[in-house]
Length: 207
Ligand code: MG
Image 1 (cartoon, rainbow, N blue to C red):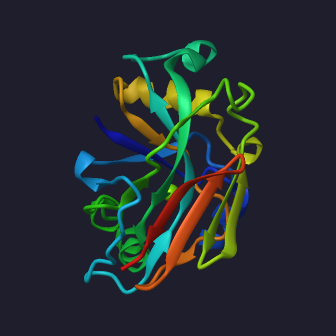
Image 2 (cartoon, helix red, strand yellow; image 1 turned 180 degrees about the vertical axis):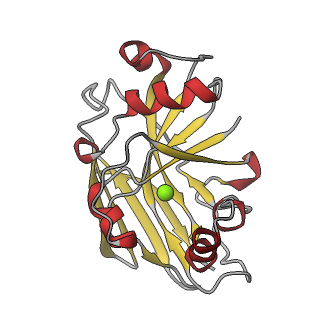
């Protein structure tokens, strides 16, 4: 399986990132290897190579069939469940990568950088519309991020259509659909929780 992450998919997050108000022309994506997964609400250990480790809370879509060059109108057939994830980002290393035009693996694809909720919810149970889902994240009990999938710049179906032009999607692949505004640092001792449509899916310690 592979992990595909979308960047710059919520307007207010793009502004907080670099003050840019331009809507990207097409979805921006990158990948993380399967070794990036952090499962079962296991603790996240802040790695020693970063002094500015950020959370990014994202809706995660699990792909349930193989597809390539998927037309947007058929994309909804390729998923039926959603969960939540944290796209952990070494922001200090990322700034350097961006400034020097380097690839993002060191800041995005490191071990355990993709926290994944142990539980996924069926879209049908949630009302059937992937673009009408509300999620939020708290650190130490304080609300830090709140997102509504209606605010995505590129819809899940547009993302699937775009990514599958370049990379075949397979059963079990995960798409992290981008973070809303409110990203910030985690430090050892923090406790992170996140809920999707009122159900707590992420609940783990930062160590
Ligand atoms: Mg992200």
